[in-house]
Structure formats: C-alpha cells, structure tokens
Length: 430
Ligand SMILES: [Zn+2]
Image (tube, rainbow, N blue to C red):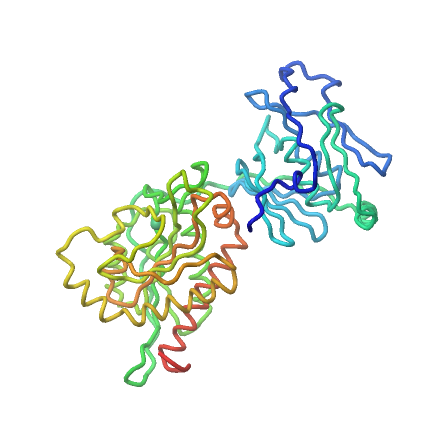
C-alpha cells in the first residue's frame, strides 16, 4: 500500500479546518445539531454532536451509520469497529489513526474514532472518509452549514445506493465489553499430553510429530508496544500462536505443545527447557518486530530467523536484549546446534516464507540468521517469525485484525506441514 493520501483528499475534497467549533459542551442546543442528508433524497435527520474534554467536535458514529443504512459492530474487548453495507466493509480500531477498507484492501490514515460521552464517535473529517468508503459515493462535511451530505457524482453508485437504501439492514447494538484477558503472574508452561507414536522412516528422514509453538513474551513482559501504547506484542503473538496450534492440531499425527496459551510470563530459559524436556521435533517462535519511534512508518514486513552463533546484519530491529545470546559460555554448544539443525531450520524457514509471501503479500526480507536465545538453546530445528512491525500503525492494524491473524497463522501452519512432508520423505528434496 503506497498511497497515504486521505481518502477525502484523494477524491478532491477540500478539507476544512474545524477550529470554529468552540462552543462549550454545556451550551449545546438545537443550533448545534448536525444534519445528515443526501443530495438526491428528501429525507434527513439531525444528530447532536459530541465534544471531548478538549472541546474537539465528534459525531455519534452509530447514529450516522443508522441514517446511511450502515451496520456497526463494536468489539469492546479488541476495541474493533466494523462497518458494513452490502459487500463494502470498513474496519477501524478505537484510537487508531488508520482505517482499512476491504475491497480492494487499502488502508488510510484518519483521525481516530473514540468513545465520547459513552458513545462511539468520529470526527466530521473521519465521518466523511469512512462513509465515502462504505457508501461508494462522495460524502462531505460542510462545517459552515453543519451538515454531512452524501451525494455521488457517479450515477451508477447513486442507483446502487437507492436500491440498497430500500433494503436497509437493522442496526446492530454494540456488544457488551467482554471480560479482560486471562490471569496474570508467573506460571509453568502448559502440561504435556502423551505424544503420538513416531513413524518408521528412512535413514535420512526426519520425523515431525511434536511441535512446540512459542508465543513470544507474556504477562509482565509485554514485548514491543503498538503505536499508542494500547496494544502489545504479547497479545499479537498469543493470538497468532493459538491459531497456528489450532490448525496443526487438526492433523492426527501432530502433537502441539505451547510454551504459553494465556497471558502469563514464561522465562526464555523456561521456554527452551520445556521444548527440550518434551523432545519436540520443531520449535517455532512467534514475535512482532519493532523500530524506534522515528521510523514507525518506514519499517514494515515479515522476517524469519534461524539460529546462528553470529548475527547477520539487518535493518531496524530493536527486539529486547534478553532475546539475544549475550554470554560466550555457550558458544561451543551453539556452534554444534548450528551445525546439527541449520539445514532443516533454513528449509522450514524458507517454506513458511513462501506461504506468507503468497498469502499475505507482505514485504519480506530473506531468511536471516541471528543469535536469538531461544533458537540456540533448543535441541531441534528452530525458527523465529517476526510477523509484522507492531511499531508501524499500518502493520499494528494488521496484527490486531483477526482475519489477518488467521492468514498469518494459516501460512505458518502450512509451511510447517510442507516441511513435515519434505522432512519425512513424502515429497522431493529434504
Ligand atoms: Zn519479541
């Protein structure tokens, strides 16, 4: 996605400064109402605008959506707002300066949606962008007349709009906030189930029966932070890891173990000991990348790492120092590890790389080698996937999106299954 022009600007709208709305909230009266209308229809309604603590003007999102026949779903736990009308879908996350349209998938910067006076609220500028995207016709806010007006220049779009309006879908009430994410505090990794019996394989083959999925960070270790410090790496890694595990568990000949399956802290040593104790065949660690604040909009994409005693150079990563091997005591063991598992780790990384590249269209760098602690301490082929840059608002948006998480998880799982086939000798190569 290279186009960062706001949708309204893209369509040639003149963005007006909203500084003239300075009435205190207590002085709201009929004159302060904002009219919602169409250029080509007689019906119109008025809504009462909202003001935040700084006096900034907002429109009540559900009221505006209802008038234009747009369905609103609010997931309070994930702070996600989904707008839909027919095939058009727009997604946004509360307080995130970005929204995503589904077809074609494109994201646009915006003034964030917020909760104001207990209601979902968007600024007038955001309202015109969102409803332009979802109605497929131009929507403009005119501050001098306090009107939000929908009226297309495209006749076909207007016809579609009129037909759609006649089959208006009912408004969905916002959902009740769900309970907060699971228990905190330190716990042991998840207890192992008894494993599958290993297949009998040819001499060079490598059996993949038990896989450890490692959701990075957890509990007090939040990992890297999202754009506005409200979403953390530990949440994205757990969501994706659970989905990968769920997909792999559909295979009767694979046992999946997770270093954590809820939000609790597990040490790096605990993770590697867990994998070694259970003699897993593969170790797949899931993380998010991050860059310094000054580069938030630059760094993007997916990186996959395999272990190397020496780090290969790369751009931008500020993964926590504890994830790297800093002591030299283990260098000999790490060299052995490198020799023993290098080829299989690289093969696994390359296969997952291909699926992610194909399914998600992520910007991707080549498989890289690095001395990550967890990769060097497990006695099995191991990789670490930096799924996306949580520090980049566009990528944070993807990380928070359940559909995107599904695709990422599917790609990782498919890569693992492809590796299993190759390693066990049921496909060409090794
Ligand atoms: Zn991490």
